Length: 64
Image (cartoon, rainbow, N blue to C red; front, side):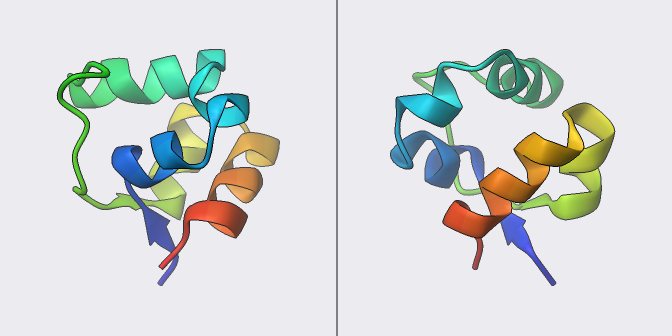
């Protein structure tokens, strides 16, 4: 199973966390930059909330 977390995505660098898709994820999970955590975000959720390209990029760099 491919999953990641908001904290892992944030740690990947600004090319992810400065995007509109990352903001959509934070809004969806009720998080801010101060409250990021390691709660799993599954690939299917990434697809529902963001775009296919963003989902693939996120899981290729921040996956378990």
